[in-house]
Length: 168
Ligand code: FEO
Image (tube, rainbow, N blue to C red; front, side):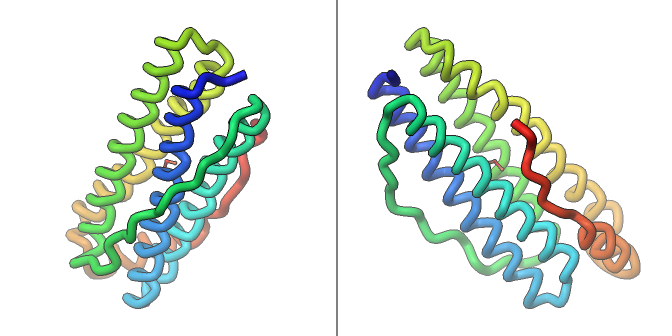
């Protein structure tokens, strides 16, 4: 069993995860057009991460006997001024997602829904990594001023990222 309130809140979060996937795909495409294939790879892996987050919620709703209710996905921004701007936006977006997960947890607590609270703990931890991943690269970009040899090195570093589905 899952309350309608919790079901609706997770459905809204599913939409945000789908939007995240869409947003990061736009960023991957921007980097592809800039010839930065390592950065592109970083965001393509991020797209897979977001799909994983969304599917985790999809499975949870279904396991709890609820109903997934898909909504319209807003169009993301497709044009960016610089790699630094992309990471500023990505970091800001992850902060927004963290806030949203926290609000979702608040609803589960108010509903005294222990299973959903336990389920959401994974996302609370995951968001620490999500924010850190974006802010670390943003810091590096600021250090190298988003240009020169540093960009080649950073592009190389980001080219080795692979998507590894978490065990749980
Ligand atoms: Fe699904 Fe990047 O948070």
